[in-house]
Length: 183
Image (cartoon, rainbow, N blue to C red; front, side, top):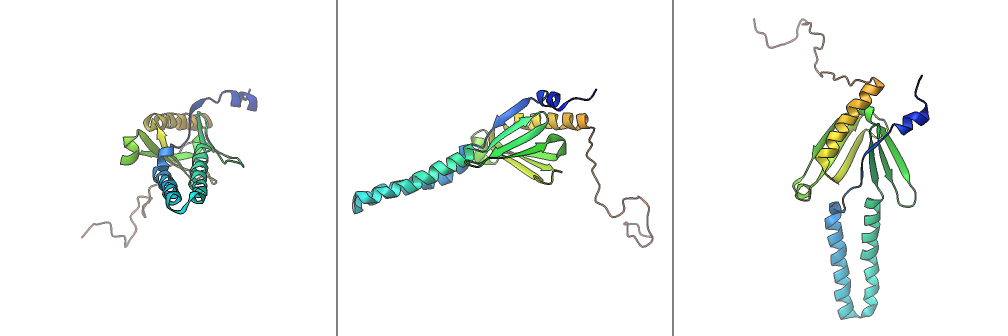
């Protein structure tokens, strides 16, 4: 008897859940802070009315913080869910059996903070490339992704075929081909 949709959902387990670290916006937040300090200094010289300018960097800071925090990644044993948006929410689902390749990188600035990025290349038409940026414990998440992708492929009986990109794929020599053989 085939699994019903309700059974399939109940077998889905969350492996990892998180969002991008706010550290990725350090430069932006520093700019907002400098802008606020500038408004404070301007108020000292030009009068307290300039303090109204403090609203601009504060709003900039809060909006960026909310945008980053409102993007939530949920990795289950079957799919990657990406939910984002502050007022309007959008959720993207990437079935793990569609993940063709994945990699992890830790630029120096993120590595100092214990963060890393995971990049995925998929066969999904809506999300052909997915990057989860600046997440903690990146190695563990990558390994969990690797195991989940393989398990999802096995469950769906899906195999990725690697095609060699050569001109002579048949192995048959054609007259006129220069294969490096000299008579």
